Structures are given as structure tokens and as C-alpha cells.
Image 1: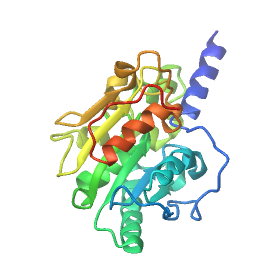
Image 2 (image 1 turned 180 degrees about the horizontal axis):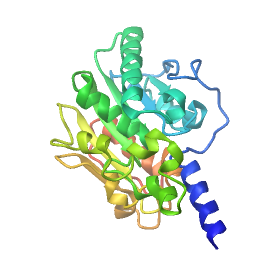
Image 3 (image 1 turned 90 degrees about the horizontal axis):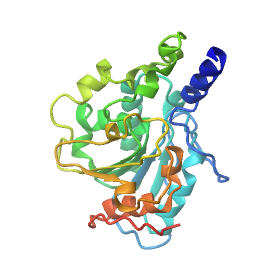
Image 4 (image 1 turned 30 degrees about the vertical axis):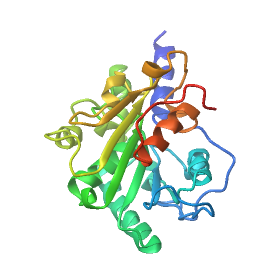
Length: 263
């Protein structure tokens, strides 16, 4: 029984914030950023959109949501967390700042919009709050990001295998960590940007699920509040059609009304 518990716990943390894979071409850079892909259709927002991956989230896994955005006319790039997100979230945020500067320089855009999955939501929030991102981000939407932490991050500790198997980012995503205490001290939504979060009842990795929300005026969307029969897991948030309708509405400054029948 103990062995079964340990194996289950190890699997859960190994899968922490890992997105499902998709058959598509990966961006050129593998240690921090993707290329900026410009659609040939009319863009619906002047701001380039950066899709930010999560822990162990390789760039190719985010091509499905990037493809949806491109088809709708957005200029899109994918940012893969340095070291696949195992390291210090604050260091990842500094690397992300450099990448944002590169995107703005290459596109000539004054601002960017962010679509962040899981750990990527914390990396980009740290950038916005502490590294000047509030001045250059227009819209922010997170998908299953443990904004207030998750008990899943400490699961190995409970079965006697140490805290997150020594993974720094996992430790920082545990409820009450020093990083989250600093990040959530005061205003959750600084700056003039539009803040939004998406969460799902079936999230296997963010416990409790309300910890994927933000306070202070953010638009917080629980998929099942709108679509009770919709089944979306943590990894599925980057693939789900209903979730994408929320993303698109946020990026176009539309009222948020998820389409429960979107594929």
C-alpha cells in the first residue's frame, strides 16, 4: 500500500503542470523562447500574444492554442520556461523579461498580451509586478495557474520523500511559500492591464481549485459554472475549445461568455 502511494505521488509531481503534446513544429529556441509567427490574416489586436508554458512544458505542446490564435488573426509566439521551469521562478521571470523585450523589438509593438499556462502564470505575474511588466502588458489570462499555491506541490513531502523532490519551482508553488507570500502581498492585479484567470473543477494539480483565481478585480472564470457538463483537466486547458473562447474574449476586450459547445 505504501509503495502504491509513493508511486502515485511521484507520478503526480512528475506530471505537475506538464501539458499534453501535439504534433507541430517547435520554436527555434529551446531554452527560453519561441519565434514570433505573424498571421497573414488581419490581426484582431495590435498587441502580439505570448503563450507561456508551464513546468516541463515543451514549446510544441502549446502549438494547438497558438494555432487557434493565429487562425483568428493574432501574432503569436510561444515562450518555453528556461530549464523547463524546474528552477527559481524569479530567475525565469527575468529571462521572460528579456524575451518580451525581444518580441517588442521585433514586432515594433509597445505592448504584449499574455496567455499563461500553469507555472507560466506565476512567472509572468512576477514579471508584471516586480520587473516592470505592468507598463508593457495589455492583457493577462492564466490557465490553471496556482496563483495561491497548490497542495499538490508538497505531495512527496507527505509520503516521506522530501519537499518536491528538490525541485525549486515546485517548492515555490506550495501554499505559503516565500515566493507566493511576496507575490500575493497586496494588490493581486497591479497596473492598468486586464487580468483574467480560467480554472476547472477537474484540475488534478491545483488543489483547491479556487487557488487558481486572483482577487482585486480580476475576471475569474470557472468553466463548469458556465458549462456544468464540460470535462477539462489541468493539461486540457490548453486544448479545450470552451477555454479558448474565454481566452479570445479576454484578448479582444469582449464580455466573457464561454461557448460550451466549442470544439
